[in-house]
Amino acid sequence: MSHSTETTTQPPHDVVVGFGNILLKDEGIGVHVIQHMECLPRKSDREYLLIDGGTCPDVFFNLPEEISTLIVVDAVKGGGEPGSIYRFTPDDIEFKRATITTLHQLGLREGLGMMKDLGKYPERVIVIGIEPKEIDWGLKISPELEKIVRQVILLVEQEIANRDTPDQGTAVGLKESLQ
Image (cartoon, rainbow, N blue to C red; front, side, top):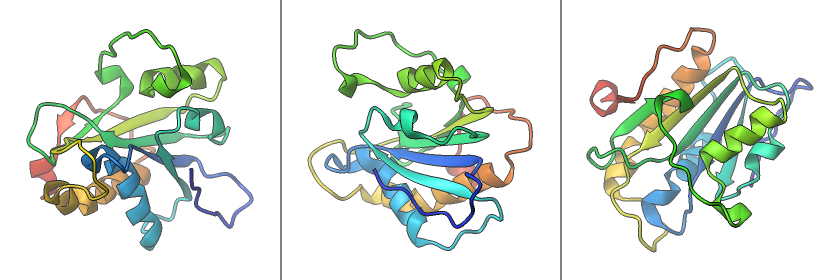
């Protein structure tokens, strides 16, 4: 798990976590977005932390205490065309219950539940999901996803800039509105 370094003594109030397995092409889109963001100059005046969550089930344990906004970027099968971008909150989706037998099976629902149990749940949680094309062995994401990485970054930056605006989102496909 990589963390960007901050120059302030105050922890950032906004955290962006990219999840995924970069060995499985489009499954690693969240990590690819974080890697791209780490190379770009920041457009927001707000301090924020970028975290490559990979497939780490314990990333939620290691987040700073005082988070206002948590933005999660990950591959999401929503039934749209490859490269479709979805924006939603945890309240917008119904999580399927599954029997967990190892820590490696922890997902978003369990991670957010742990944050609530620890008293670390952010005021605002936004999930940016990207419809994958290929989940198979390989290090490169598909051309369809490569084309929309910059759009995802812009959306994340908008979420950070608008963190004080009340959330009005339900699950929304954003591919057309961001082009």
